[in-house]
Length: 335
Image 1 (tube, rainbow, N blue to C red):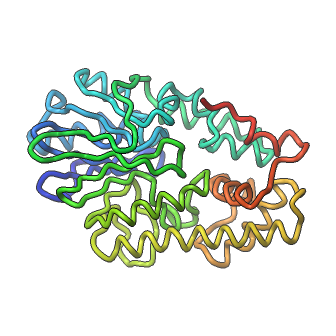
Image 2: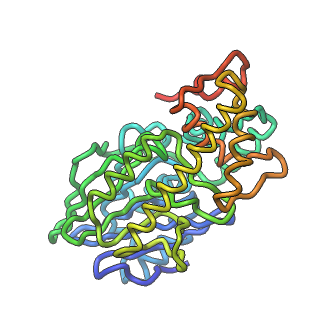
């Protein structure tokens, strides 16, 4: 995979396939060079290195690796990249720093699919999930710089990336805003109505909506996303401009509203003491009428859908009851 067409004179998009999917990484050039996200374990060799070569660059030219969050498809290649470019400074928000420790950290995380699998009483799927993580996540590279809201990464030549904390997808999700070029690198902070057909938006806390508002307030002219998140437009490219950004943000809010209504209806019909699995199934049966979703043959409610459903049920006051499955999410160990 080679470098995609330039987003602008100083920004280049790299498509990095993994596990039948793809994540989009971005090279940003000032007098120093930054890569936004590393992709999966094989992305540095399979996607980043050829892209650098296309630009007449090599590993020695790379100065920063800026993670938008710690999930495996965005930070799984950190260690392999660091081996090829040991001079690179790895940076991430401290709330997601623990995810860079490796697959075991993800299996303990309440923002990983494994937490939803436990909540759905499907512990038989945990081994499969762990196997995926061990394929996608390479070696650990550690962290050279913790990035907080308002911090600036100065790449020189008037390229200054401001850190915007946008939790929801994960606790430590951030965007990088280049105000001078009105360009925002959002990772997975903007979900639209899902990152591919049949898959809903993935977030773990309804603070996601506040993050969407914060992103809208930036009034960016170019939005560089980590995936091809669905919206109401025709072209499903990961880079959106102008009014397409507003439509993408509106699609994100609309999807969240649909999930919220479905969860409220499920609680109203089944009662606040109902088990999570019952509520999730009731909510999902409503969602399929309004969002482009698919049932899962094994779990009925797809594991990815359980994450946002749990977030909205919790926001409406639902709490885990006595069963071990209902307590699984709240008991998941995270820093």
